[in-house]
Image (tube, rainbow, N blue to C red; front, top):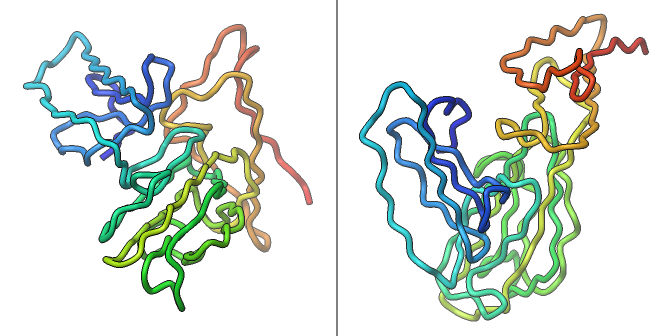
Length: 247
């Protein structure tokens, strides 16, 4: 489980070989996290504790693998692929990836290579894409050699992707990239928005805006749950503005 309120002691995992690498997760408390898989050949594990209460700590194992199958993708942009890619994927596998942006933002999914076993109705090997989770709206179920079209999320800030292979023929597999799209036109009676990469540090030189619209003669109330923005020189550098738009 990735936690957003680890303000005292935490274990942070970064996908790379330095402390500026993309964050995979930040963990605290007593609930054991799901297994974490890197998307490169290096992984930084950073343990942080403050001056107050100390606990028992943590213990973890690690192992090298030539095959990555599923995981939570929370970095700003990245790539993922079928197990063993660019070699043929193994039989009888099921991999699930969850790509997450911050609330009020969108995700773009693009396929670079796509070669799966074909078949009527994609009953053998297939890649399934949904918004949200395993029961969310279906974007599509894909198989064969046709490259799926680029997709931008329209409902939320999470994409759920499942790859399944059966016991028969294997293809060369797939490789896909993803990126966060910040700023959005938000509609509906309620919802959330958040700064890029929240609850992690927002990027430098960012400039995004969100437009919130409701139906009819209603008004909009915005309530801040958390705010941590540089406050030097009367908000000269970093700032958040809320403006009234009359349509």
